[in-house]
Length: 149
Image 1 (cartoon, rainbow, N blue to C red):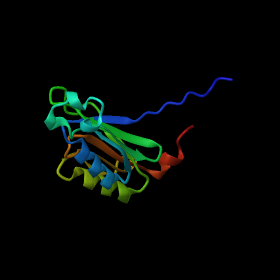
Image 2 (cartoon, rainbow, N blue to C red):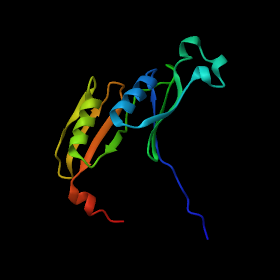
Image 3 (cartoon, one colour):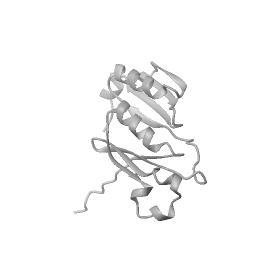
Image 4 (cartoon, rainbow, N blue to C red):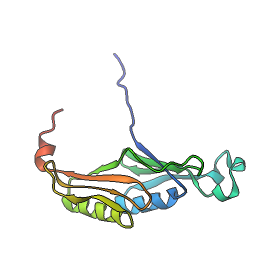
């Protein structure tokens, strides 16, 4: 009998020096728990990292049950702003979708106001204050009930 293959698929985002602030913000807004916040000063390569980069994040993990959002700070010479993807949050409560959208949009840029669409009671897109693109989605009940296995 073949063993079932198990794969973990999580989002990993990089920041230009704001990872800790972003993850503390996401922890408050999204309700997860930071389980890892490793800075360069605490890592094995600390002596090879410039003094002004010691407090930057080498690896962070924000846990949501069995799902994770992970991230780190990229040195200025390696950092590129986020593009070509969105971090998607799916919720079942329209009020929760509105709350999350509003909190993430604060000091950011709304790219599609949260609204009803043909597939969702609430859907919106934004880029948060840290430059990370998000989609917030609350499917219509009919979509949740008619999903094929």
